[in-house]
Length: 215
Image (cartoon, rainbow, N blue to C red; front, top):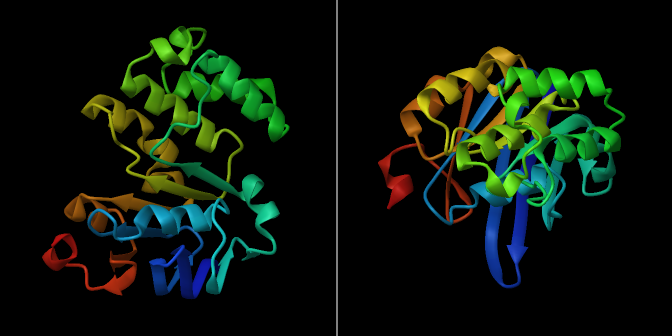
């Protein structure tokens, strides 16, 4: 069964075309790698799938929700990890996750389990502004998975993580998590190794996955 279906998806910013004619199908439990250079449309695609941007043409369905009309269904079904951590810097990590937990009726025990799994429970009461980039990235991952969504949308998920931290988050956001994943990455080799399907983008359009993507 398909978790994500795209058919000739389009998105524009004014007159600039960000996505044009993008089609893909991702089955439940599969990983889709989205590859391409800067400005290729990778982040735009992820934000459309998260319901943060409206498509201007074509069709998109994510976990049964047709976009844009049913994008209100997505927050409960999708975990989104973007370039920005989407955390309140003045609040502590625990306060940030507690706020997110309340939005999704997640029990406190789940919050503490996630903090422990990320090995940041001992720093969770410090303001986010005082934490290193690596710890902030771990908290952002915790926010994305806290409500146990079946689909993860991950934009460079291992950014700012050292090798030990990257290994730590693998069971939560990696292929072994069993979730359907869309992973944006600049690392072609690693992305292809951990994916079932690959989608290359260049100037918002589908392109072969090769070195030409980055020219």
